[in-house]
Length: 232
Length: 294
Figure 1 (cartoon, rainbow over the protein chains, first blue to last red):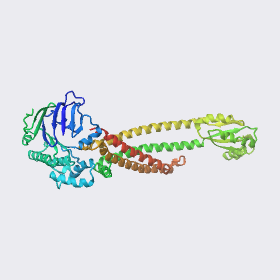
Figure 2 (cartoon, rainbow over the protein chains, first blue to last red):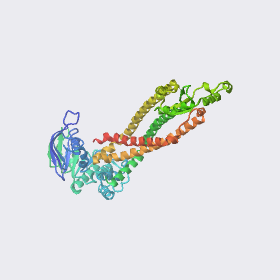
Figure 3 (spheres, each protein chain N blue to C red):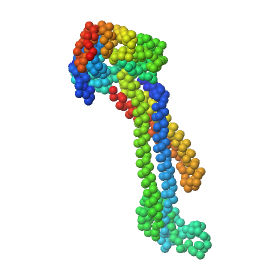
Figure 4 (cartoon, helix red, strand yellow):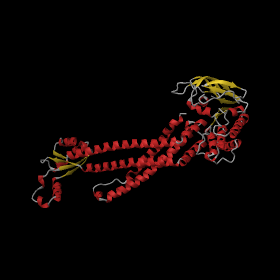
């Protein structure tokens, strides 16, 4: 569960609040789109959830952790309950597809046996069977993003965040990726999914909850699955 | 930490040395270069120090005994002379022996009509610390029975000055070289880790603890540091032997002696491996510190 209650945040050295008295809640198992124009605070929301930045006021709770008062050394524990997918994939270039996924399991202390069982399963789930020994430079953009998805879900996170995941993909691959995320939301122990995007058509093709933000504030929160907010 | 995790992280450290081959090569090269430069200069200083020790050990102070003392009385002074703290050794030379030594050094004819009684019995003394020659001379002269003491204070002062200058210059140069080396090595390691900033950020995002990220870097630094230390030691050995052989076989071979590398090899190896290890481990730990604050 993600709970923002009157959360405000200003970047160090900045004058304006990146997040201004923001309130919303995402329940376990939900699929939510977070939309808004550039500079609206979408990335700041993700950074607050992952503990990259700290809120200055309000209540912020992620998967049971109080993110306003959490100690820095506890952050890895929170992050292990979250899977994150980025627009630029952020894969480790020196590792094979298999190793990029396996190292996330090593981080949580999984045994070699567990890793050998789980990684092929997850790679198969995202359609990457047969690509295990390839390096990121040897696979396509769509496949890279699926490696990132595999890495994000391999530890069965409670929350999956995708930050503009389709930014580097063509429309067909974007839709395919969204369907994959939908499947993860449905099947993988009801993983909560938060997709940050500004792709209106993509959002409107799914009947999901849409939270729209601007200037660090929530301006609409609709359950009708319609991207009603117009990007400036 | 589980042993499988340590095994995985250690393997990652070794793998990283190969995957970042150029930076590994650069790091080892810098460590070798800095150690060899510092080590060579230190060994030169050690050898010059050894030469000064030789010269100092050959510097003598001569205490002449009163003319009125019989040889027996003169010999009785030895314990009193040896009691002086700065006296390392003293040898009694009776007047007859002194005359024979003169005769052998100069033309025998010159001394044939001269009796040994014109000379005094004497003590040839070697000092522990020649910088205290003046003070020791005064203490010797205070002994009843010692007529006067010949000590070359100017030579002693000159040797002390040379040693002081050498020590000062060595210290300054070694400190400067250490600082320059640390700066170069820190930047090399920084450059090596800069290229892996993204990798560290990804690991942090996936939930890796600082220790999980740091461990392979420390393994990498440790291996590269030890490798650099070992290579520097072998190179230093080779260079030292070549230079020492040139000196010993050249015209200076009769004038000075060079300390054999075997006499200092254990110390050099320990220092090289220790410095290599410290630079590798601390360098890599410090260099990634900034990237861990995410």
